[in-house]
Image 1 (cartoon, rainbow, N blue to C red):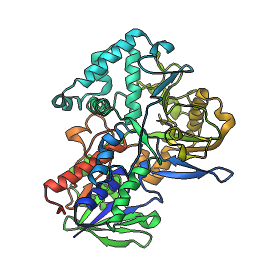
Image 2 (image 1 turned 90 degrees about the horizontal axis):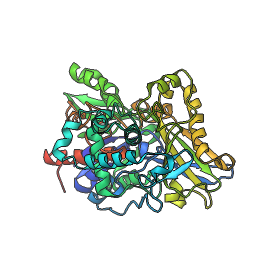
Image 3 (image 1 turned 180 degrees about the horizontal axis):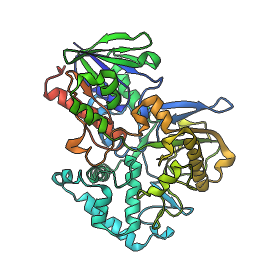
Length: 484
């Protein structure tokens, strides 16, 4: 029986652990430096002044393929297909909000002045994206989303709306997002028709994976004792880790890092164990978008909708907000000059699962790009106010019904979960997707990566899940593990 140490309980770490325990004779120790399971997919409780509890998510997630994608595939592969209850974004479906009006796209786009030609152009472009053949997608990996859009339409509104979607999914402006990755995302979404959320908060997913590890007598260590300080190398082979306040040693036949790839290579292992070319490659990798998330608990329900994409005033006008990478806005924010409002991805989680909060209350989570505000805590506090002003512009009742306001900033993510505060992982941009995605097999023997930084494809947590599935398949194929 092999000893496997997994560093980190995010989707990639908890997912590969669950897959291994279900199919392989292994002894697993999973180390998590935070007190909660799941990393950016974790959930936690907040309490109001009366002691009532509200279940919040670290991120703001809507799952592109939910139970029909890699997250659900892991559950099926560990023989627990019903361990997570999925709730689709239906009845009501996804909404856009612009100029004070909620609308379905494309049916009701004319309500907010979106031209018929824009709608027709978007439908035609969506059909073009869906019709891209699998063998044609790799060529698009090296094309930016904005270049791809420019090739197919001159319509500014159409490009803006597609770019908003790209920013929401990958945390990057369209000049950075890989068109190949965008096409994969759109095709998966259309084929699965399962856009959704889950009951119990997003943490229910990694917790289901970890339950499988526990049932196989795996050991889960969290908090200070779960913090790894060193991956021990001997003869170019990972042989164990040191963890906790006393730097306790755990021997390992296999070490799997769900920790961020840069910290793992440069700090936990150390540069001296790798060739200079690999170190330069790791250092040059670009993180995915830096995002922040405003989380609100209200003492009354202000909306029946589940998922809303909020477009700030001017977003669909030439020279508008930042969906098309308006650098002047980013430059101003870094100088402390804040925009009046910002775009928001809004998930009303309690409309998916009323059990997340007390009866009659509501939880609203929002996410947006930091756009330069990550430069300092002072700018983050100012940008928090911009996010709040934006959501209040949409729902004025929030001001009189707010009981909890929580802000997960870039600096919070950087301190708690690494990746320099990235909301995803290694960016899904040109030069870092497809065959150019970082390998899951480290140059040091017996060290592997399972995370949003190596292998896989998909949106956010689904990228981590696909990474876990891909690593498990690699280990089987190369007989690194012995199946039960």
